[in-house]
Length: 280
Length: 283
Ligand SMILES: Nc1ncnc2c1ncn2[C@@H]1O[C@H](COP(=O)(O)OP(=O)(O)OP(=O)(O)O)[C@@H](O)[C@H]1O
Ligand SMILES: [Mg+2]
Image (tube, rainbow over all chains, first blue to last red; front, side, top):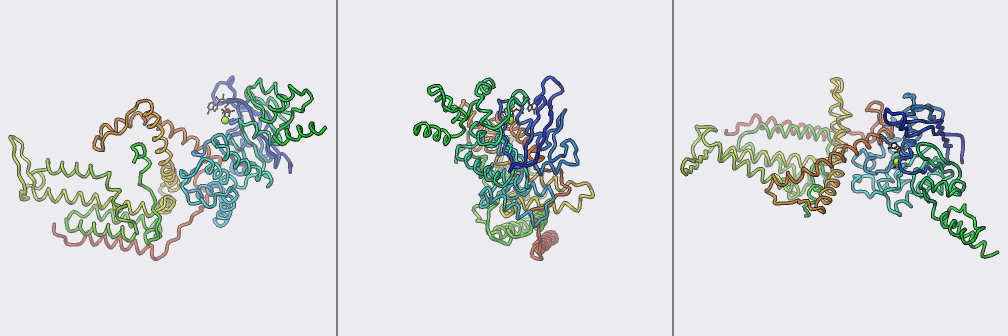
């Protein structure tokens, strides 16, 4: 389902302060196609969040361009359309909710887009049903668990009907169950053809993406399918990054059995590899 | 009740679901009616008038189907203040307030004289009654109105004044976000108090020790403000990310619709205010 490029970043540079030596992004080029799942990993301070905020025009590049469906994010005339096309879910569930009840909060985005009244209701209902929070629609946000808040945050973005959703460490404050729930939601979104950009410190989450982009010091240091990126364990170790649990295990096994494959991304693949050797 | 959980039990702005005429009332009508009733409380100085008002406030509690005990619970934190006010009035007004009034009680000890006149006594009763009436009316209002209704009502009522540059939408948004963040900040304050208590900070001390209690709150105030500012900044980014560009060009999820029943409430409140102002109550 991967189609034409949706997001094209070309040589993006960005610095927060005046000083040009402290650039947070130092020439990042990146493409996200329609329906694609891209994971961005990298150590703390490598510029992941800064890059994420460029993807829907919250930040505008100092040099280079970011285009969403061909539209430059620096042109203020496109801001609304760009924000609608690329939705964003942040790490902290408490500071993303504007309204005092769930359904009003989900309606906030489409209200801003000027969606007519009747359609607002169908959109809010569809979005809340998708994340299985429709029954909680008249709850105030502070009576929800962190996982439920993140699901509402996703519904709030979905109600804007985006082509791409950026998740900036959206699972980092959740317990394993909340994380698994969110993972299922993301998988469901991809089946519907929504592109996903997920920023994460969990390599197991990155391993399920179509493509992994590794940032280090404001530069793309590696990019490609998870198998290729995680196959190069030495380079990741230099950056202080982990491997997915399955890949790490395969690497350990390889020390004992030199021809054991290392480009394994999941427990299932390990089981298959071991079963294959046992059979032969 | 745990002393750390006090903050979370703030009842202001809390909605008590029930199926009553007041709950169904259009928020715009309810806001106007509440303003009229509060005006009636403010402009009625007589004893008989306040008796009528107290009866009216209690009637409102009934009409709103709010358990009386629940409505009165809002009064409890105000009791020390009420007592203090009454004591001050009794002790210090003496003959200065309406010298023509007859003396009810007199007590002399060395150079200290305490005189209580009928006028002061009446003042004490009337100010206590007013306080209770106001509290009852406002709690009936907040208990029967959802915050979303309240903000929509404010926005809608202020919309005609937009020509005078009254930022109706922005004000409503400010109220919404403030209400939205009360529980979040209360939880954070609780967390801070527990963190400081676990490192030897002391909280609590009796209900009457206002000074001690206020002083104890100071050390959590600074981190709390920092937290609020950080959350606020994140919220701005989150709002921008959801295409918020100000009030223009927005549509509304909830649309208010008022019927004749709603405007009847305003008429009743207006008639009530007129009656209170015009009635020949004994002074
Ligand atoms: N608001 C800001 N003002 C100034 N500098 C900032 C700001 N936000 C980030 N930076 C700096 O920009 C650089 C990149 O930060 P960024 O938040 O993008 O990193 P990150 O990869 O998201 O890190 P983390 O994994 O901790 O979320 C860091 O050196 C950081 O100190
Ligand atoms: Mg970050």
